[in-house]
Image (cartoon, rainbow, N blue to C red; front, top):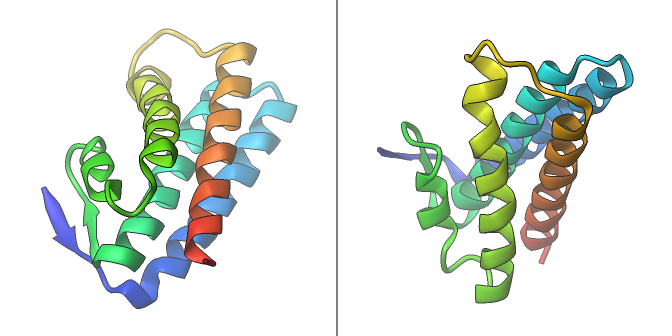
Length: 129
């Protein structure tokens, strides 16, 4: 489901994304890989919410993949394809890192943080253009 979002609140999503990313990195440093992945996932979600909130006054609320449909048209086709790949990789880790009994490893954490960093950087660049 897509929800309305106040565009003036978009910077708050960036703040949340940055906090999630800092927590993900701190978790990685402390070998808390499940936490690192989960926080990286939430960084990516918040970063894309900042974009869609700012440019469209909307955000996804049920299925996290909805945000990808909202992001279309905000980014160039090449940027969109890059973000889609990064975000899909992150979302694929969400369920496993938060709800399943299998544990995340160091590579899961490092990759998730890398994907989240890329998404956040792209979102911040687009928001300042």
